[in-house]
Length: 371
Image 1 (cartoon, rainbow, N blue to C red):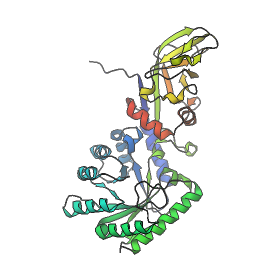
Image 2: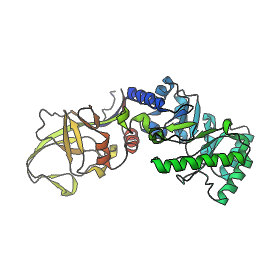
Image 3: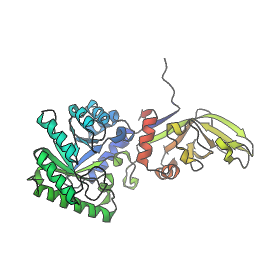
Image 4: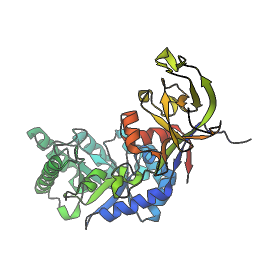
């Protein structure tokens, strides 16, 4: 039986991931290490195929959020240190023990659970104290209040012997708020060590993302946790290239008269006779309905405007004046050659979101072809 023919697909450029990684490693300040972030199935690229690229470049630290990601990373042959980059439920924590996931602790409840697992001989790795440090107000302990400091002392009383790291996540990488957050985090790390007997030199103190690495600001961190930079969704002026392209095919070509409606609800009416192509991608495959009347696809070296409302499994593009278009031709929704392409800035303007959101969505919804 033949393989199903995909309606739309993502082309993943593994060589570009490797090149982006090399560029990122070259930006690391002296004395710091790199943690490759594999959230959302490696930002939609597929953990099973990205991990071998990391191993080839000697990466020994990976960050995940879900248990499924942790298992996929281990199944891909990774034996290094594995960090969960958010808080976890007790059930998640217990289920991830076999994959040796280093967990974050930001509450006394989590600390007591981890102590029980460690003393019971089930947890084989240490934990990381998560601090808010004036940032995300998400899952880090806030030391700005008396209550927060009291809870931190209680956590330290439970777990100090097993804390191997302290972490935070900056909410902004603009120069002023980043500097403020970095200084506050450094002060809080000092406070934790002074109130626990922990030795700063023995800890992995980590903060900072791809944007932090690119900011040019020197912060106190032993490790940068980077995902977006691997996939070329930031700062392509430094040589980073997007690693995913989204493609579909022309499935019908037709001539339609002035006044004909395109798509649902008659919101798009042709102002003159047009030659239109139906393309086999829609919102079910991540071509969001929000892109109505602002997008274009690349076909035979020409950008063709997308008209009308987006359907579940199809869009319509104006092919008038583009010669030799045939049923079966590729239609590039994102990507293309450097001279003419649907660029990152085009996608951001079209879909009103950031590229990590698009990559994660497209890569999970569509079959992936590796180049």
